[in-house]
Image (tube, rainbow, N blue to C red; front, side, top):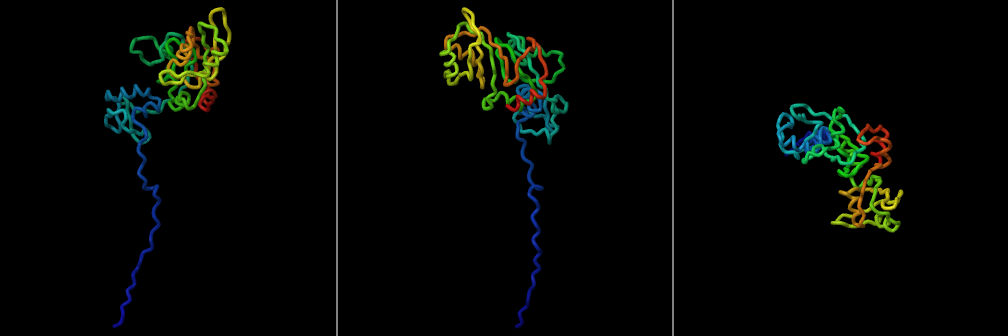
Length: 264
C-alpha cells in the first residue's frame, strides 16, 4: 500500500503587536480633592468641602468622595458647573504683621493675612509654611502646590532665618545648647544656627536659623531654657530676604526668585 503524503501548510507566525498599543491606561494617581488642589483651584480642605457638598462632578456625575481617583487630563471635571482649568501660577511674598492668623478663614473670626489681599485680583493662594499669630515677617503664598511642598517638606531642609528678641542676654554656652537641641514630647527641637546680634541691659536680639520648622519651634526651644520671646520676625526663606517690603504689604516674586527657591 502506497503511503499518502500529506502536506500541511503552516502559516508563518505574525510578529506580535507592540504591547504598548494595547496597554491599559494607567489608573489616575490622585484623589479628586488633591487634583483640584494641585491645579491651583483651591486648597485641599476647600476642595474636600466642595466635593462633600455635591458641587463637583466628574464626566457628568456628581462625586461626593474627595478620595475618589481622578485625572484632569482625561476627565471633564466641573466645580459649581464650571470646567476647572489649571490656574496661572502665582507666587507672592507678604510682610506679615503681628496679630494676623495665617488661615483663609478663622473659626473665631480673627483677622487673617488674606485681609491684606482683598481686591487684589489674585487667584486662590495657599500659605507656604506658617507663622503663628504673634510672629511677623516674611510669608510666602502660592497656588503651585508642588513648589510649595519643595519648600516646606522637612527632607529638603530649606533654611528659615529669624530675628528674635528675648528677655535675657544669652551667653555662648546657651547658644550652643540651642544648636544641640532638646527633645520635647517626642519632637527634636534645635537651631541650625544661633548667634547674638545685639543686646541692651535686660534683653537681646538673636539670629536663629532653622532648617525645618515644627509648631512654635523657636518659642518652645527657648522656653525650655527659661527664656521668653518678646518678638519673632522671619527675615529670610532660603536666599530670599524680607528686604524693605513694608509691613502689611505684598509683592510678586520674580521668576529668578521662584526658580532659586525651588532649586534649594
